[in-house]
Structure formats: C-alpha cells, structure tokens
Length: 294
Image 1 (cartoon, rainbow, N blue to C red):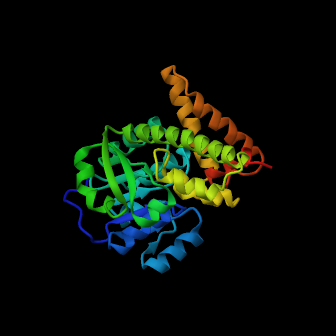
Image 2 (image 1 turned 90 degrees about the vertical axis):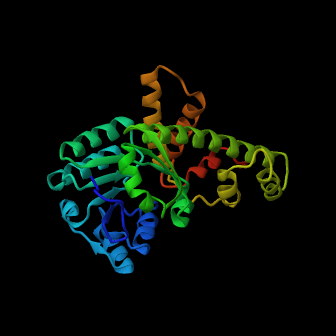
Image 3 (image 1 turned 30 degrees about the vertical axis):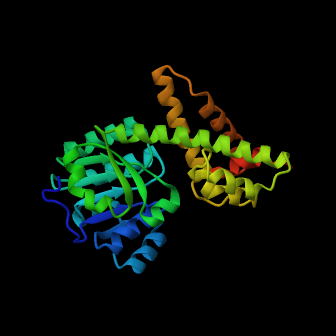
C-alpha cells in the first residue's frame, strides 16, 4: 500500500473519462496529482492528455508501472473486473486501487480480494452529486475498505469531494451507494409526478419550482432538473440507462435480503419503458416524459 501520506507529485492514474470521470481526473491534474489516463476510446484519452499535460496510455497493463494510485470510474461490474484483471500482473504492495464506479458490493469484494492477493490494497469509493458535483469538486464519496488506506489518500479525494465518509469494510461503500440510488429513484418519481400534477392544475410551473425549492419539498433534483424538464430538455446529467443498471443491482440485493422496495420497482419499470422507447441515454429526468401533459 502507499507507504507515506500522499503528496502532490503526479502519483495517480485514472481509468475512465466519461461524464463523471473526466471532470474528476481534471481536478487531480490541476492539483498536480495526475500522471496518466486511459480510456476505452483512445481519442478521448489523447484529447484529455493534451489539455492537461499528462500521459495517455495505450494499454491498461501499463498503469501499474506508471503510477502507484490507480483510480477507476467505469460503467459496469464487468468493466471493473476487466480492468482489475488486466492490472493484476503489475500490482505490488506499493499500489492502491480506488474504484469510483457504481457496482454491486459483491463485485467490490471480489475486486478487493484479487488486488490484495498481489499485496496491493483496494477501496470501493462510489460517488454522488452528479456531473455538477464532479465539475465543481463537491461530490460525496462513500468509502469501503481499510481506514488507513483512505487516510493516506484523503488529500487526493478532497480535491473532488466536499464529503468523504468511511462506511466500513470493502463493499460497504457500494451498499451505501445502493441506498443513495433508491432515494434518487423515489425523488425522481415524486418530483416528476408533482410537476405533472401542477401542470394539470394550470399553475405557472416556474413559480411553483421557485416556491417549492425554498420549503420542505426542496431537493437537489428539483433544483437542478426542474426547469430543464419543463423545457423538455433531458441532456445528461446521469443517464437513465445507468440508473436502471444501478436499480437492477438494488433489486438483486433486496431479493437476497427477502425484502421489497415498491417505489424503486415502480421507477425501474418506468425506466424499462423509457429504454424501450429509445431514451436510455437521456438524463433520468426523462421520467417526466411519461407524466407530463400531452
């Protein structure tokens, strides 16, 4: 594991330069922590590297020889495991792998087991706060893993997050993120239903949003997505298809626990309907498509 408290000396590499990963990696580059990047689409990595004066690696297997701190922000469980498997040959006791992706707790535990066999360490560290939080460096990070490893990289995480919470052992970060995704599903259902109700009542909905945002019903989703929904704009944001993937993870976790999550199931069914209509790449606020007046 990283043997000394982290210093700003380009010791990190970042895998995955999507809507969340690119701004997160940018903060590291600006603070002098980032040395290299890799992305499934090489052109994106090259453009990022030129802009931020870092290295764009051609092969994943080069990461362990380039940096000691290896961060992932990818879309799916299988993507995380593919990256980990590719890194294994080069990992040593000096390496720390941080996974910012949203995956199942079981995947996080498997990844940690694989990494630790090499003497390295692993943190599952899913984030919340949306593209806005990633861009402004105000994310919340829910971390699972050894507290000592977290403390050694806290300065690095503080460049992208306003809150860093140690949830417990590996997998607990992902469990907390699952709770977050259940909350997001419910809030999405409530906000879109309420806005459609207001439309049917003939209210000036911009005034409604202004009033609601200052009271007990105010929330991040209403504030950040309310106006764009009214205007029929559903640009990510957080892709609906990715939230559906997260809710599939939640559904499997709930089944294992023998419990039901009715509101989450409703959202999941609505997302499937929208996915079938071709809206999987829209922001999750596209749920309003099913509820707004024609």
